[in-house]
Length: 611
Image (cartoon, rainbow, N blue to C red; front, side):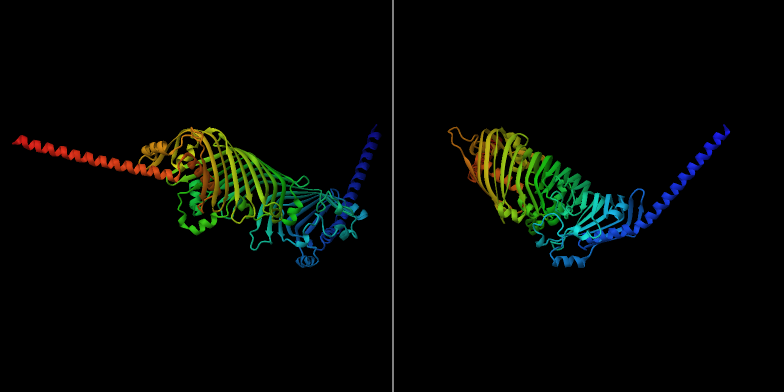
């Protein structure tokens, strides 16, 4: 029995010794292969990048470490830089790309590569390459010779590496928390665009004898995935912050989703115009659930043109406020200059990024326009709730505008949350004067809901009235609007208001209101005889006013004329008021004279009594 135990113990010792020797041999072999593979890998990486980019890019790094057992390698202090001399040569050869990149990072990780496969079969296969917190700078310069070129390298990368490699493949290239800088060399003195915390995944990069002609690949890739959690960008005028929350893009489907987009003003409503120095519209925009389909990534990469087939926006609001109590004469030239060319389609043309979105769909978006009126010292607000509709041919590309120069907008909304309103706009994208047409039809609603805008802005209170229908048709531009307003209503009664500083609120102008309802206001349209009054509008726009103000003023002028508040009627009511005041003054004088005569008689009677 003791001999058996002793034999087992010796056997275990031998097995343990053999295993230890094997492990030492494997570790030594791994060390030897690691040491031998490092210069091979370094050389192959540098040669591969240089040759596959048509001798345009070089890579440098301070050191490289490898682990043969895990099939991984790490490059430290990496820098990928373009050769500017070679770039100029490629321009002459008409082979230069539109974009030139510089990439720097402290560490680049390569996971699961196979040195034996590289050595024996001349295939460099990597499962994952990680750029950890890289700084990427991209300079864009448009070249005519790159127009209409397919999204693949001009010269096959395989032809450049075929003497050294039969295949080069990376399953995933990850840019984690990347800092991205874009410099537009097509515009003199352009401000660089910078974005941080960007995550990019490049899927299945393949260089072999067939990949360059594969129609399912673009720039040798199967897919590009971009993620951005939160992004805030201050506008150049320092008046707004542009905010994005959770952006996701997938190139293979051309789809992009944004959880939330916001244009947030940096000053409150009453302070905004004072900071701007003139009566400037203050916008607050917030949109949720934004999706874009059919994005052409190759066109954006090569030309910096944003092209998409469809955009969908659900849930959001657009709030506009203007303080017209600010004196624009503080800097009239500056204020006029800033307010001309600010219509929606004019702003689209002035965008720094070329854009084409074939169709935009809106759903459940609330739009409001508010003004602080200096005369009434109150705020008037008109709102369009649950707005839905479409925008077609949203573009500033000259090639597209030459084919179709019109942007069509069709909207259905609810005026002040009640009256159903259909709107059609047609914006001329090439007109120098900002020309557009606007027509709409408003369905039945109680006219009293308009008091929230007619009282503070028009100093008119609607006591009662039912709107049966309202339709309008305008042709407008920078100078103003012309058109027709057809206003169908009945049982209308109004009161004219004025500001009373002593009471700190608007008060009714009693006599004017009585005369207005009796002599001016048409209580119904058509009247009892069936005669309908259609209002002609010829509104001359004040140069410092906005697009919203132009629409509102033109419509309000048409409504005033429809109900009878024309210039002639206002002159008539002023005449009546003048006559009334003269009668009242004559009555006061006669009364004063009668009083004086009576007092004189009383004095004389008193004297007689004393006698």
